[in-house]
Image 1 (cartoon, rainbow, N blue to C red):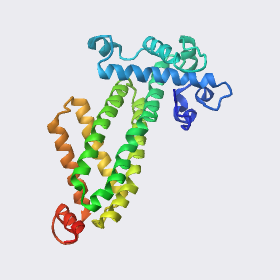
Image 2 (cartoon, one colour):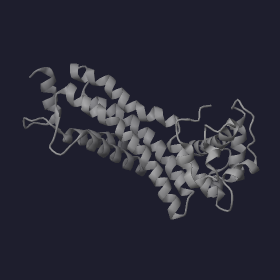
Image 3 (cartoon, rainbow, N blue to C red):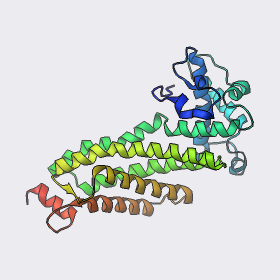
Image 4 (cartoon, one colour):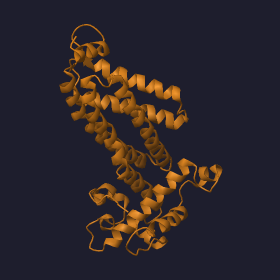
Length: 283
């Protein structure tokens, strides 16, 4: 099991874990770090099962229990069986990391930060930019319509962002204190900022390949942030209202296409889609 040692977990978890060494992958006692990650992975797996309806507990029970220490310990025991070293994931080990009356609250905050930096999200963050860079030459050759490319990527990103929003909303609902909510929101925004940064070189390459330019005042970073914010807001609405319908997805795709087209300057007074087709066909 891979826990992403590249992340500076002692710094990320900060005051929410009793001692930084407990989350340090460089700790000479590797099992200490692995134990911490197993508790967090166990909590994450429980949330996944609750959101997907794979949990044996009833919905009513989940609404009250959500994520208790007892549940985390049970899930961590299952995860511990998958790691190569022998570790203890009992209540004592849990309290050693998240001690005192606020132990569960601190665990929730570490769990939110862990979720936002978990390796599984890297694939999602990289899919859109990687696919766009691979398909932009097809748009340049006239083999693929730009609108179809945007639709394909936007649909995938919305689906993944809805899933991410469910994680975030679920975990944020476990935190009541305003300070914890601010920390959770900051972690979530940092991950979305990382997502939008990945798109900057894609937009720049798109301008070069398609021989177009942005309207005055628009930059690749600004457009990336606008699309990311639009996707995030739409995903949070769908996740909160449970309205993941085909009509809403189509509406979202249309809105993203309009946002991108509005940022481009065809320079000849006609719509960007028509201008782009003319330019690529040599007309």
